[in-house]
Length: 203
Image (cartoon, rainbow, N blue to C red; front, top):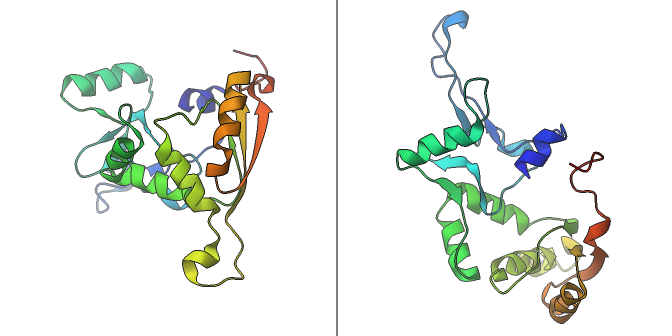
């Protein structure tokens, strides 16, 4: 997704920004930090629920590597990994194990909690809701739970009203129909092949 956003020039906020390191220095001598997550969290609109290769947990901050004219992004990531630093990335395990990994990282926890509180409709693409994705289903069910049930105010409507799920095959359709009752909201299925995810050029 990161590549797609950059390639298509989509304005996005991933919550990262720079902080002034030496406020007392003259303006022409001031130094800025590397990109740190949290600086622009209030306006964040891109959330990597399972992490992303450019994000690293330093133990103090979540930092983001970025492309520059001196070194490609993957080269920077490789350099960090050669030093024993690894990207914030969830890959293995069942739903409970993935959620445990998420809960041990403040960036991933923030992204997951944001998913748990989304409103309106959710559109998914390229996500199959397989046997190891129970934690995502759980988040969607939580978002679809009426606020009133959580706050005691029965007049409050549910947050998430519907989810649109892209499918690529008849077996995908059958799978979603089999589990549709577990979402806690209306489920709509659409043909993912009709979506030009990579922009007008198709590249």
